[in-house]
Length: 346
Image (cartoon, rainbow, N blue to C red; front, side, top):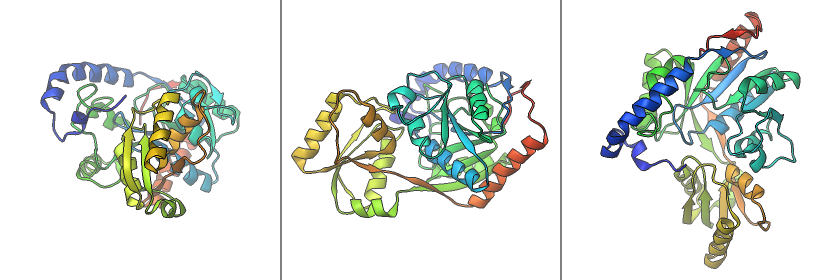
């Protein structure tokens, strides 16, 4: 799905206003679903989600949380729905899996920690327990009520915030904010911008913890791109953010191609991109998520000179986030690990 531009306007446009009744219906259904009781897993569950549809930076945030927890002596396992993959799970991601099997995000996550794909989240959490994890990092699922969450962190893109503030399809919200705030413990704002500042201020008014961060490419990769003329392509929530990152590295973006989020590349897509890059004398570059999908595309020739730009999250007040995570994990352990059904909460 490619997010329409009117979603990100600071106030509802005429088109958004026409879609408002559909958004109210969607929001009511989502709110009702979020209020359903969830199951308590055998392990503490940390949820990394977002208020909106689209790329706020969940995957880098989940990777950063895993690094923090590993540094504290925990053994985390990622739990993902596996959007775009064919396997319903529960299954642990292995080296033989491709993005077509488990989705692009689990492929990236599995490079950092054990990763489980399961459309049934409680069953996935049970598998995490069985393979020896000490904590579950739930990638996405802020609006999913099936598991009780011990700490829920909403990731927000500072440049776009919550857009026009309306639920799908009138706006980008997955549910009305008055349903999402009570189930959110902290907000992580990635990048700068007035929309993100407004969300941070609202979070503080509601006594939620607020953290800020920025995405940075590795220095050696940035140096490699400096001064190069590139053809950039991306099928992520907000491709413009990737193109901006390339420019900040000093790359000369001569061509930029946007695809829908989680786009499955076809041989024709890749042939056209390679031909354009070769004809214009450009270096092709893409994101890690897109590279996972390029590698899983069927009947395509290897693309050895395709460049990949990884990004890592640098969190301000990382110690504060670490303390929040460990406090919630320890509170859960002190309160016991009962697996009976419990009301879904923060």
